[in-house]
Image 1 (cartoon, helix red, strand yellow):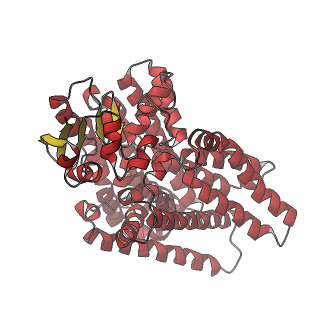
Image 2 (spheres, helix red, strand yellow; image 1 turned 90 degrees about the vertical axis):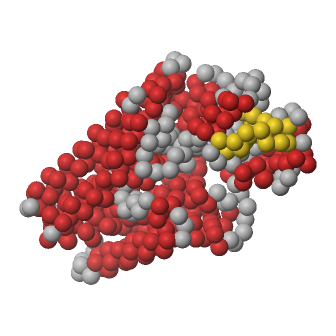
Image 3 (cartoon, rainbow, N blue to C red; image 1 turned 135 degrees about the horizontal axis):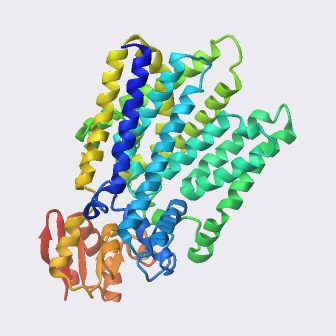
Length: 511
């Protein structure tokens, strides 16, 4: 196989991925709500449905909430509005938008890799398609882009900002203002992106201050100020409606402390996200072997970054602007992800979500690996083509299986919980649970007790039985862990008794 043949093979793989994932938009109506949509994705979808129906910014139809990320949720609301009550059509539109973001992000990652260094010919073209497939071919990438949440939108905006910066848009007249608007959208997509905005502004100030202080203030202050203005409606809503800039979903999961388990999960999240194409099945889902493997991947990525910096310095001349911009933005992004890793590892109890919060590390990782691997692939094109195809295979298989409501991942849409409740609980009765994403979307009168979308429940986390009694809620359906957490070690002492079970789910009733 020649270099041209390898490039054609990689393009064919990219086309296959695009077709297989795009077919999700047209899967049978009975499967539209199945995986890769997730439990938490239904929180955003419920808010979007209520916004479109004119019921307000609410998940349960009763009280306001800010337990979601606004930008993509309001895009979803537009899909519900367009569908005029046809929820299957609304989900198809959401999946179609998710697919566009997925394809566009893969393309942007490829463009970043192609223009990251000063070369041309087959190596440049190969870097483009290797980076695209390292990103878009990743099983974790697939799950994150089509889960109903904001992750794919966040990755697209990061990649777009990086690409525009690489192309010199920031240097143009008015560039800092335009860039600030894009960064404001990034903050609306996920508010922890404000850390990146702050670091980006600081980087502009520090690197330009000695040569031109006024230009440094402009290039640092303008994007930060515009980003704040663009995102200010969300900050104002949080503060005046809820009395805090932190969404209730964050408050409900915050507990500061140094815990060995959280730090291990941070390592796992960084390792798993740094190479999303290398999916290791249960070795990435079990947290003993998976921790070691992910740690090795994280070290490999760090070594690649060092190699890239060393190669640029040894080139004997200053790097061209595109390379300099690529490296600068990438290092700021990596620093921001490192800061978020510390923040989440020290403050958030939901360590099983770290790999979603830190998934932007996939962007600099895929660009770095493509930079390093392209010359090697040219030497062994047959082996390279076979390896890339093997890495992409789990994603293609999962996209096909999703036509039947399955993927290679564990099930994350809780149908058994719904079925258990339907067997025992009258439709008019209220049901409480910690995990209420799926439940709240498909059933009325659901009470969220972990506080993600229900601010009333946050003060009662240590005595939830009192809150449920005050609300006259008589049904509770969740995993045993949440039963003990919210009904007590012996729920019978508070008037509860178990009346049913299905799979790992338990149903409790209070007389």
